[in-house]
Amino acid sequence: MGLDFSYNIALAQELGSIRCGGIPMAIGVQAVMATPALTRFGSDELKKQFLVPTIAGDFVACLGISEAGAGSDVANIKTTAVRKGDEYVINGGKMWTTSGCQADWMCLLANTSEGPRHQNKSLICLPMNLPGIHVAKKIDKLGMRSSDTAQIFFEDVRVPSKNLIGEEGKGFTYQMLQFQEERLWGAATVLTSLETIIQETIDYTRQRKVFDQSVLHNQAVHFRLAELATEVELLRALLYRTVALYVEGNDVTKFASMTKLKAGRLAREVTDSCLQFWGGMGFTSEVLVSRFYRDLRLVSIGGGTDEIMLSIICKYMETLPSKQQ
Ligand SMILES: Cc1cc2nc3c(=O)[nH]c(=O)nc-3n(C[C@H](O)[C@H](O)[C@H](O)COP(=O)(O)OP(=O)(O)OC[C@H]3O[C@@H](n4cnc5c(N)ncnc54)[C@H](O)[C@@H]3O)c2cc1C
Image (cartoon, rainbow, N blue to C red; front, side, top):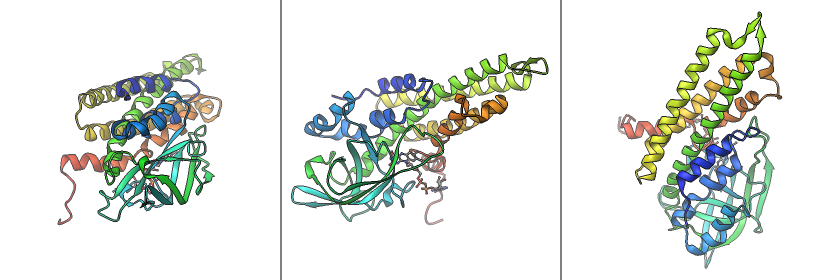
């Protein structure tokens, strides 16, 4: 058993082209956010119980990393899973959990000991129907409004210790690996969305007549669309290079961070520029460009913000100031 990542990228691109949706958040959580660690490090029994029905679409998965007090600083999470006999007892809470209102299980990151903060965490498959799990609210958002985002609390939730993914204490490391797939998936879905929105803008501006000529006939418009299309191809080249390195088994943390950073920034640039060419129509809820303008804003925030991507890239470039300086 195992998820073929190149297949996931292709699937993500295909799904990204679904015109009504843009980024299919729940599919992304299911395929590349909540499941890669389970696929790589989970026991056969766990895979049978959680992965197989998730791939089949019978289970909805969610990923519980971020908390109200810890988003960018993942190592600072406070949720605990204390071992008692053959169970973990979980207390704390998660924030921003995509699909959290309807999920059957959560890939949960929790502190399982009091050791150093990069070595005291574990990933656990948590069924979401256990006593003590409380979905407190569905968060009202600027975009991605067809995807539910939940705040969830845990009070003395008891889960079998065999639900641990891989080794205890390796959760932070597993999650950092899992993030790479999330970041590449994010860039892959953006790519198709951006192509769609550029093409829609060409179609609209070609037929929209202002001062007796197509809006598209203005050089400022068709040159700008050509620039944006070129940028999208550069993003594609970086994404394909990174995916190829990943499939070969390389550590792609630096390149995946660059790809995610570029995808988030380009998404903002393309949707903002294209929306402008639609005039007043671009400001309505009737056209795809306004939806993409709101939805794709998330790419610079979710799965690690632009600033965190820059920090990671700087770490690999060895340009971060050391603590002594
Ligand atoms: C719609 C949505 C869906 C999400 N889905 C999930 C999910 O399914 N599961 C999950 O676990 N999480 C999820 N998240 C959470 C997401 O990953 C976090 O929002 C993100 O990591 C940022 O954390 P934060 O919101 O706590 O921001 P903060 O960490 O509070 O950051 C605030 C600002 O400070 C900046 N900052 C932080 N450190 C530095 C630095 N060193 N230098 C410069 N600037 C810095 C950040 O870049 C940001 O601009 C989701 C978020 C959203 C909005």
